[in-house]
Amino acid sequence: MDKLRIGVVGLGWVSQVFHLPILSRFEDAEIVAVCDRDKSRARMIAERFGFSRHYSDYQQMLEKEDLAAIDVCTTTDAHLPITLAALQAGKDVFVEKPIARRYSEAIQMAEAAKAAKRNLMVGMNNRFRPDTMILKSFIEKGELGKIFYAKAGWLKKLSTGNPWITQKDKSGGGVFLDLGIVMLDMVLWMLGFPPVERVTAKMYMHKTKSVEDSCVVFIEMKYGTSIVLEVSWSFQAAEDYFFCDFFGSEGSAKINPLRIHKQLHGSLVNVTPAKLETPANLYKRSYENELKHFVGAARGLHQVISTGDEAVQRMKIVDAIYLSAQKGKEIVIK
Image 1 (cartoon, rainbow, N blue to C red):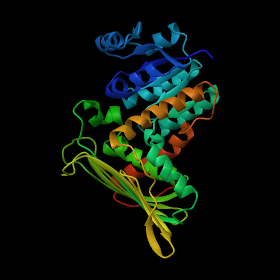
Image 2 (cartoon, one colour; image 1 turned 90 degrees about the vertical axis):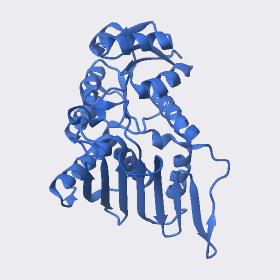
Image 3 (cartoon, rainbow, N blue to C red; image 1 turned 45 degrees about the vertical axis):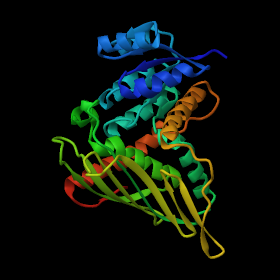
Image 4 (cartoon, rainbow, N blue to C red; image 1 turned 120 degrees about the vertical axis):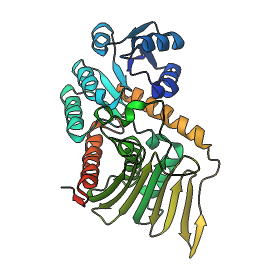
């Protein structure tokens, strides 16, 4: 079969470190052109990776190039217009997380994908980590019994390489839209997307001015499960780390590193699979698996995982979390 012809829009660190090198290695895909609103960056990256065509206007790229798919790695404020233009031009779209700055924008994108009958996949690479896929299979099979509590978090120093991420008009929000949405998605995906009934959130601005740099969220699910999320760019922690822990009636499990303990004959037994990869390799593999999945879906080999519709539901919860923090009270999600 012919290679999937891809155009990449947005050439920041996530493109340079993950998307461009990974997609360039795929035998069934070809990066035809790259685009960045910074002309010098577009030219420099094209030269570095050996791409013959580069643009500073995504509309021109869509008009001039024969593309089957667009990979959107821009600032969040640009996700909506680029995705809509690509879908209307008949392209499949991969867009990095978060899908958009707010729920209303996400709805427009998901509806446009359905109208165009094209794939819209949203980057949630932690679903594609080998360790999270193993744990999800344990939970789905009921190996831990009924999950009644989960807690997850990501504590990470604020990167100086993406100054736009603290500019609310471009990012839509602070650390929760950057890190929290990833942990929210991981927990909901692990649990099979149970409906969320209510959320309570507290946000802090220690080192930022217009967006939160720390956030704690309590979530209650329809079927009795409770979730606590904590994310921060400013926690005074010795090192960056993320965690995702589950507690069930028959056992417990955690990610990073993967540990699974199960009740067997009255004792708690470690049933963690052997030969786990290093955290750095797991992170790299997550992007490789994610982009490989998108290429396969765009070529018609399987259905998309992490769809626009799923992202809409996530953003509905995210909007409620920000509203709870703003109003200082619990928000019921209808």
